[in-house]
Length: 84
Image (cartoon, rainbow, N blue to C red; front, side, top):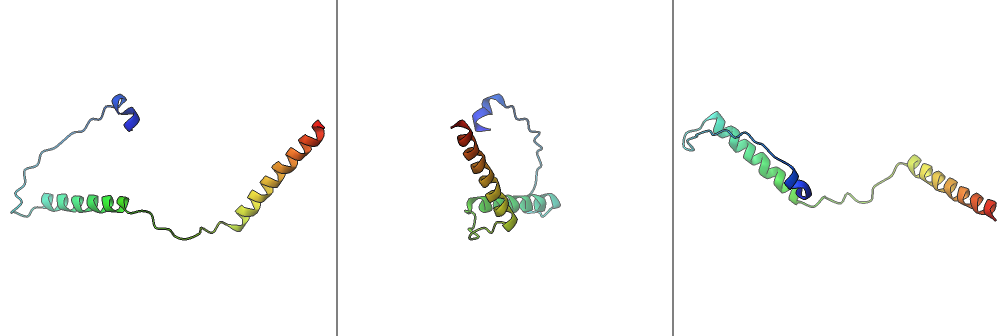
């Protein structure tokens, strides 16, 4: 959205809740839980993805890819023969 942020209008409805941090309440616990979840998500985004090693491609997919490439190669060869 950074490229188009001047074209986008964002509306948010904010709600003000007055809480006493010294007095435990369900709303305060909910906010603490949401904050912990948001911080955990932020940390997860910061970590580079773990390298799981080489990916194993399904055997059938490799064979299909090879067949497609071979067919394209043979089609090109045929076009070259026809044009000569």
